[in-house]
Image: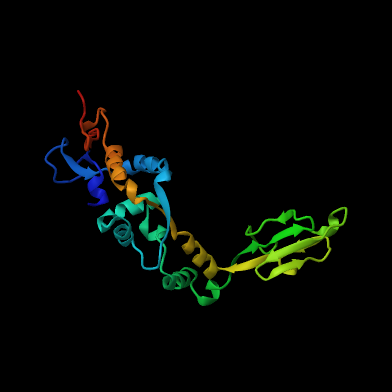
Length: 241
């Protein structure tokens, strides 16, 4: 069973040069029914679990592990919201560096700064002055504690621990290290890691999902309707008298 076998057909006016007449049609799969399917999937979030894609995972191996059928790989892809498998499926760890090197052109550029990410700064009453992980550039700055009245002190929180900042008018990235540099290589690795967590369908909802999928993809009665799995586009080459 495959995803395309579940899609309904559509009779489309033939673009072939060797067609017999302007009324000839070709039967193709209607891939545009996916938009209707995507709306259905968004409304069924309660049926999903979280899954973290491992280095050697593929849609078919995940489907086999979850449902005992590698042919249900399309269920994995659909529920995960993946449209372009080449761009949205995570690379293996060993391939991320090759991808980054190819993208940035050299090791020097690969390890150049992509952006900066802020550290959290709080005052001596525990109030947050600067949120962590904001993406900024090297010229980013904030007002210092010396501009506050009454006098308060700021503390910077980082992986290395807590550091009390000097009482001054301004804090900057380059002088006071209020943000850390993120290289192009680290950025690409982080973006790749974000792709690893996906939604997967709970096994107990599998049969319901497949039946609902078929119902959602079926055509309803309209001027183009032929059957629940076949519709016909208007023939723009036919001229009415």
